Length: 231
Image (cartoon, rainbow, N blue to C red; front, side, top):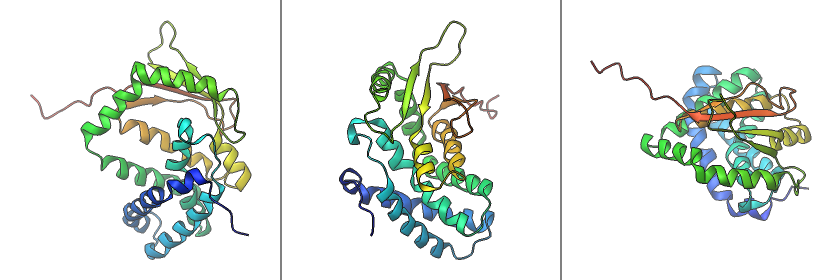
């Protein structure tokens, strides 16, 4: 029996599928060069079919009321890509490289000013207040498949703006449930790309996927790139 997509995700299905098709367009030259795959159109069809399955597996964690719903909608499509490439015997490490290149190409297609403005908003006092409140809500564990995390204030001598310690990871739970633990670390690698393209420096020394007790995200504004063309 075919799975059913949760009504919240069904409402956003068209937009999510459009993002996946855009990513697959960006993936074609990368797949040909990195994985020596010639039938990239065929891979694209397989990935979209697999994404349909992922949509039925996507856990509901509160819909628009939870910031983590957006994480699932933006990143679980890479699980579909990972499953298909794994079936085509592409090494897991190479899958990670391919996925990072795709995400970077996607994000860099957004004008720089818009990306950096989004980064400033993420680091803003207003967003930090929202994250504190959402962290408190997450600890109630209202949804079993959700993330659970603490907001981390910088202490004396710390150089980061703020941090988040994830004590439970929705992606880890998803991978455990659906047999995707081998490609799970590739999702972790996407974090650095997602933040760097917005001018945010992410420091992280451990992850739940790697066997640690928590993921220790520390955020700060990335230093401006030096313009060597100036005298």
